[in-house]
Structures are given as C-alpha cells and as structure tokens.
Amino acid sequence: MQDPFLPFNFDSATLRGELQRYFRSLVLLVILPAVPCVGFIIWLAGSVGALMSPQVFADAQFKDHGLVVSLRSIKDYGAYKLARIAQEQPDVVFIGASRCSEFRSAMLKPLRAYNGCVSAWSIDQNVDLLRRILTAGNPKIVIFCLDYFMFTEAYEEGTKERSMRYGPNSGLQLDGVLDVLTAIRERPWETIGEIPTYLSRDAFEPVDHLRMLGLNGMRLGAGFRYDGSVLFPRGQLDEAHIVTQKVGYGLLTAIPGGPQVDPRQIDALRALSDIARQRNITLVGIQLPIQRSSVDFLDTDQGYWQYSGVWREFETERMRTVFSNLGIHFFDLSRDLEITADSRYFVDAIHVGEAGMLGGLVHLFDNPDFRMIFRGVDGNAMRDTYNRALEAGDFFHVYHAQF
Image (tube, rainbow, N blue to C red):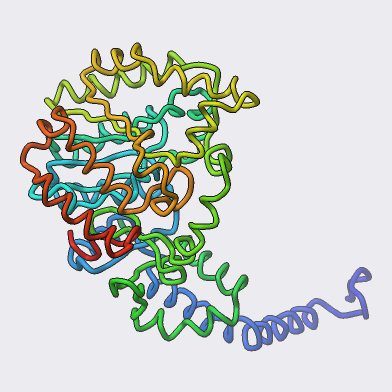
C-alpha cells in the first residue's frame, strides 16, 4: 500500500533504495575525497608543532639549544616555562610580563639563570607563578618586574584574561588543527607556498640561524629561545624606530593609570614576600627602563595628572620603605638617563631590547647592594660586552646563541 504522504507516490522500499544510493554517492563523491585532505591538514599541523603540548615543546628545546619555539596560545606560556625550569634548575629566575622578555641567561654567568617572563602580569599572577616554580625548582634568587602600574586595580582586572592555564601538560593539542586552517584561510597562497619549508622543518631566523618550531614562529621568525628570552619578529624590530617616536603613546595604550596605589596590591606583594622568606629566596624587584618621553609625560602632563597619581606615589620614599620592610630589594631603572633618553634601545615605549636590558643591569652593578646580591657575576665582563654591542650598533642582538 502506498503512503499518501510520500511525494511522487514512492513506496517505502523505493525510498529506502533511493536513500541508500544517495548516501553511497555522498561517500564516494564527498566524504572519501575529503579524508586525504583532512589527514594532510592533521599531518601538516603535526609537522609545524601545532599539536604539541607545552611539555613536548619544552622537551624538544631541551634536546636542541638552537631551537626557538612558538606556542599556539599565550595561556600555555606558563606551563612551558615551568617545564623548562624543571629541566634547567636555575639559580636565578626572572618572572613577570613582557617587559623583561629580553633578559638573557648569559648576562648573569656563571650563575645559571632562566627567563620565566611573559607568564605573569599582575602581582597575584606572580604569586601564583612563584608557588608553581618552587614545585619545579629551587632558585636562590627571584627577580620580578615591579612596575608602578601593577599597583592599580584596573591593571589587575585587565590582565585576568591572560591568566595561565596549568592543566594536563602532555599529549596532543588537537585544537591546533584550527590554527593551520586559519592560516590557510587568511593567507592561502603564502601558506601553500611555505608547506615545503614546514614539512622539512627548515625554517630558520636570519640573524643567528636558529631553527623555528611552531606555526607562528615559522611564519614570523619569532618565539622563545633556549633561555626563555623572546626573539622578536624581525618586522617588529624594523619598525621600532617609528613606534618609539610616538610620545607617550606606547605607554597609554598598553597600561592603565590610577589616582593612587591600590592597597590590595600591597597585600598581594606581601604574599609574594612571604613565599620568598619561607624558602630563603632573595627577592629582587626591578622597574625596567621606560622611554624618556613617556616618563616626562607622566611627570608633567596636566591632562593625565589624575591617572599618574599612582606613578607619583610609587616614586615616594614611603613606598621604598614598604618594599624594604617586605624584604624586597628594589631597583628603579625607569629614569636611567643613558637608556631612557635613546629610542634606539627600545622596541616601543616600555619594552627595551637586549642592549637596553644589558645596559640597565650594567648600571645596577654600580650599586653596591646589587653587586652584593650578584657577587658571583663579573660586572666588568658584562660592561665590556655592553660596550662592544654599542660600538657595533647592535641594540637588539647582543648574546645571539649564547646561553
């Protein structure tokens, strides 16, 4: 009996037959041809490191000092750096946001040092990171970025979205396939043209010929070196001389201001201090150089006066006493005249390049308190390296592949 609701008066057997033929055609014409494409995309993702976990990136770099790695998500940086600290067991660890990204392990030789930066922005995040570091290693000295803007509630709130994720740190990251698909969609012909390089893993950055691992690193020539420092994209360094001419701009677009120091941030700093005391760690806080035009802006601009209140309070002797009472050795490079007045040291208003970072440490060695903390380091050798870099005009590449 025919079903009155079926079109064209198909009976049930005929409909089933038609559906079966349709699905067979679908499999033959669409699904089967797609399988090799999907397999190729997954294979390509694996070749460029898009499927690698932070632990696997760390393991690969531990075996190859000349490898620069680029993880797929900023939220994985903390897990990667913890894994590297566990492998390196450094005497000195530098933690903080991107401002300290150009600290190099070779700067403090013969001490073993590691750059754990770009994994903690707010003071609370530094507290969390230090706790985790002490489960992976046992550093004797911890240096951390101690900047005026960290003492605002707005900064704390604004950096919450950058909190690290410390979940399972092994296995495949299958969502990395999406990165490859995004690259193909946004840059189809360039990505296809780069496939031979990706598959051979012969992507090298041009200055030190370090090998790149990770899709973004291969594309931009950027990532984390063996010592945890950041190799900036070549294009960003080439444009630095333009960016640094924008007076005050880089500072205001990157960080918030505030009328005064937020007391809650002092409490968070106390928690950081307590952890260091419990483990007999020397805690060193450094405010790194800020381009002179931005410092002048903070000091004098009346239109910004309400928001620079935290800057002025941070500069007071009272705050120095707070740091001292917490057992924090504080050093301020924000007014280092040689570095802050010369834009060639800067990638932008608040990020110094490698020579700027080295020069700041060289100048800190003029301070007997700093020399006492790092008494095993040859400050004169550091100064010689710095002077040679300046003579060569090498503001962004000083130590190259030295770790």
